[in-house]
Length: 163
Image 1 (cartoon, rainbow, N blue to C red):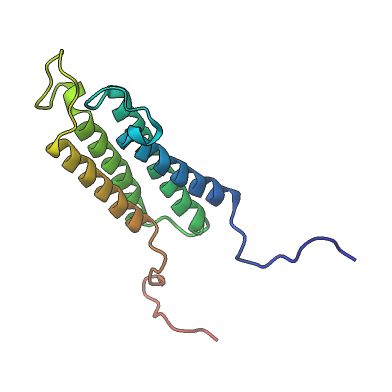
Image 2: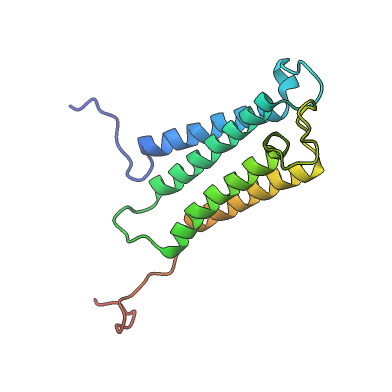
């Protein structure tokens, strides 16, 4: 008599999927702590510091990487890669770059408060850039992880059942 639990096909997630989901969840918490450090009593001075921006971007990067890894783990690896999936991966990365540059605009010297003695400032335009970058990343994820694509048939052959 076997002592192994019954295995239901399709129910168990792969290790890669589990790691991806854990990365998204952990990245979300790091992202929220970076945006609102007062949650864990780390709001030591007024304004936004470089470390706070770095923690926020680190959390966002973990979420992006985890989401892309999840989409990769869920797709059929034997199927040919589609152009839509390649565009999706590039949009995920582009969204992160938009978020990073708009959040760090003052630190990089391209923002409105870039004097060396001033604190970095996460103003309305920087927040809008962060949000737009997140939306571009989500759009890329939706393109990459689209599950229901029409089946492709070879060129010249009609798409009929051959039973």
